[in-house]
Amino acid sequence: MNSFVKADTEAPVSFGPFIFYRQQRLVTRDGEPLALGGRALDILQVLLENAGHFVSKQALIARVWPDSVVEEINLRVHIAALRRAFGDAADGFRYILNHPRQGYCFAVPVDADLEQPVERHNLPARLSPVIGRDKVLGRLLSAVPRQRLTTVTGPGGVGKTAVVLRVAELLLEHFDDGAWFVDLSVISDRSQVTAQVARTLGLERGVLSQQLKSCRMLLVLDGGDHLLDACRDLALALGASAPQVSLLFSSREPLNLPDESVVELSGLTVASALEPEHQILACPAVQLLIDQVAARQQGFKPNDRELATIAQLCQRLDGLPLALELAAAQVGVLGVAGVLEQLDYGLSLLSHGRRTAVARHRSLEAMLDWSFERLSDDEQTAFQRLAVFDGLFTLKAAMAVISCAELDAGQLPGLLSRLASQSLVMVEQCVDGVRFHLLHTTRAYALEKLHRSGQWAVFSQRHALQEAWEIGRSRPQPPSQFLQQRAGLL
Image: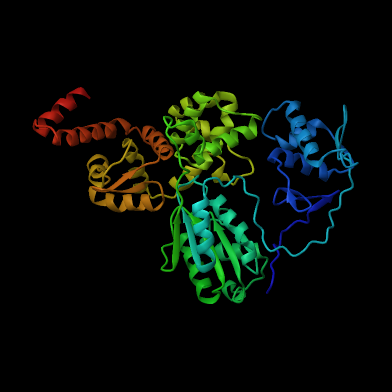
């Protein structure tokens, strides 16, 4: 077997020197991709479906913005972007015609019957740029071809999917049978994991590991956090029967297999607002946020005050690329300072995500819901209560504050370990021992859950008393006396 073709691949559409790949949401000219936004691609798709005929402005708006009320100016902006990208009239072609009453018409002949070379990949276009990941990419580019299984772990929104896609793009020529992206988030039954891989490769029924026995390929498994057992079985079967198949798995937690190489992905580097301007601008998190704002506001360049606020915003959002992109979308309306201020009221501001992203990536809350809903009842309870800690804490402190009759202190080491393995609690090795903490974004989510449960007052008071006890231990007066004084102030 030398090549694979997705069974459901749609033929691309060509017009002039351009080719439109609908499933990949990509337009190329002479093999080079064009920079077009999601709305512009949606409009192009409708125009190509009706090539040679006028489509009314109202019909275009209804197709492209089905759930929103928008002005006609929005449509004109994206039509103008398409015309610029095509060099409308510059090469003798008028691609998009307009009529005051009839709307818009795609006027160039369209060919949907291209003879296509066999594809060696199905990698979707990345929705996010990969910034500040040079060291991680270098490590992965070295490890993936030499390992049967490499797992990229990290908290939700940290950019795992973007990183593994970039690695697959860069390693495409290394694998004779290509690189294939398998989205596991669309299935819920563990028995369907192997079938999903087979469908992606366009394979008929059979034993997958035997069918891939002589293949040299890269399989990118994404969104399989909820199917870990099935992914382990798949990795073991392929490792035994298809040794030249490399697996690149992205997940909040590793598969914990003996030959697994694990690469942990953390948030982009953030800068202090007190650092010099050139150091703030060199910070990857700041670069990403500014790039995302500039993509929406042409010519955006922050002044000194805005730059310091951007640094604070990046810290509040833990350098998470998804959070930074969602925040950037609000800067045009609220300004940088306004976005930072609104974060004091929770994560609702970051709820307007990209329509083209998978459901769990459309908002920060959806991303965290994806993790929270897969926790056991005890894990959910512990996770919410840990939100009372606004900085580093020890296992002993957690046991003192959040344990109760329903959540025995003896359970907490195991629960904390489980939350840490899913990247919901972060672990730090300090000089005086292990410490834990929640990311700012994760804590904001957990706090809202704790408030809704009606238990915030109880556990915040217990946390205050525990802190008082710790402070009292370093004071000359008896701890009990100090605790009583503190309790009287609560």
